[in-house]
Length: 217
Image (cartoon, rainbow, N blue to C red; front, side, top):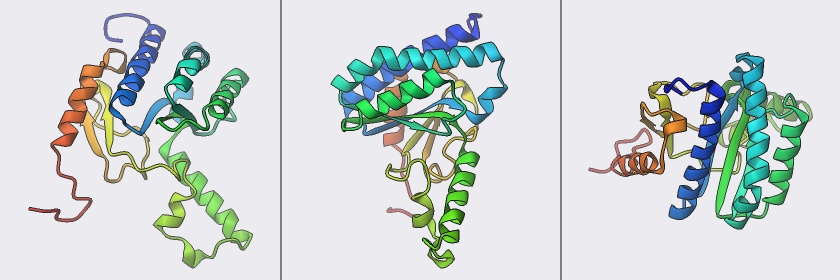
């Protein structure tokens, strides 16, 4: 945080931000919320910070799971979970299993996720399917490719909110964001409020999405 607090304090405040934004999504009927919790590049951070982030993930899931279930939130994890600490893997697995039937909101948590890694994973899975004879090369198209992404059964994001004023995607949903609307704010995520969220949504509602076409006059 820019207030001079330790980075771990900022991450803890960010968890509270997530709680508030999840509640806002439930209140207004948003169906899918994807949050970038930990990227494939975040392993480069100091060991103590990485450990604190994993502990916060475990703490969040254990503390919030009962309320998330009551509110109809389905938790999903997106990314390579194998390198995560055992406690984090177990809590993510438990949260997914216990909320599998919930349908009000999909909370998609990107953990050890990177857009490039996801595309490489999809290409590898497609190559394996071709090698096994389950898929012919001429059958590979966009629709086929999407089936091998983490988000295969989810819609592409309509809006990507980028806090901290950074004008980049930072390896986030590279395929899925092809026609997503971007909204950038200088506000850091720990300081992001439901009011900021509403402002982003109001701005999105004023935009005219053409998806590469001319749209309507």
